[in-house]
Length: 214
Image 1 (cartoon, rainbow, N blue to C red):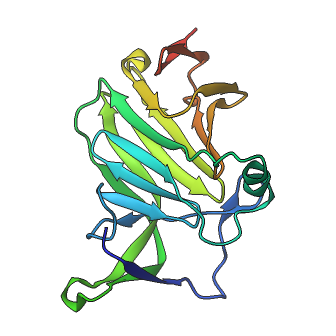
Image 2 (image 1 turned 90 degrees about the horizontal axis):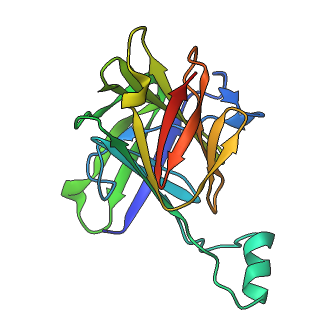
C-alpha cells in the first residue's frame, strides 16, 4: 500500500463527544476512496483497521511502531512475538449486500498519498454507524465501534426467520458473553450482540454462529 498521511478534523470542541461502553469514545467510519486497501468503508485506528465490504468485514491488528505497552513487552521478554489477530466475518446465507453509512456527524478526514498529489483524498465524511440493510430477508446488521470495542447487532423485523442469519467468523474463537458472544484481539474485543426482542442463544457449528430462538 502506498505511504499515506492522514489528517482528521473532528467536530468543534464545543460539540458533545458521544461515548458509551463504559465511557469509551465512539469511533467513526469513512467511505473508501482509495485510502484503504479494500472495502467500501473503513475505520483506521491506532491499533487496528476495519475494512467493510459487501457481504462481510475484516478487522486487522497493526504492528506498533512506538511503545507497545506492558503486555506486549512482557511477551517480548519471554522471546515470543506478539500474536496479531486478523478477524474476518462472512455473512453466511446473505446476498452481496453493501454497508451504508448512518449517523453522519461534523468532522472530516483528508488523506495525502506521498509523492502523488493527484491522488489526494479530501473531506471524507465521518459516519458513526454502518448498516447492512436486508443482509438476510427482514434482518439488518448494525456495526458500531468504540475505543477497544467493535460491536455488531442484528436487527430482526417481525416475521423474519432469524435462523437464516449465519455469521462465519475466522481468526479467533468465539466465547459466550452475557450480551452475546465475544472474540478477543490484540487491540480489544469484538462483540456480537443478541438480536433484540428475540429470546434464544447463539449456537456454534465450527466457525459458524447462528441465533437459535426458544
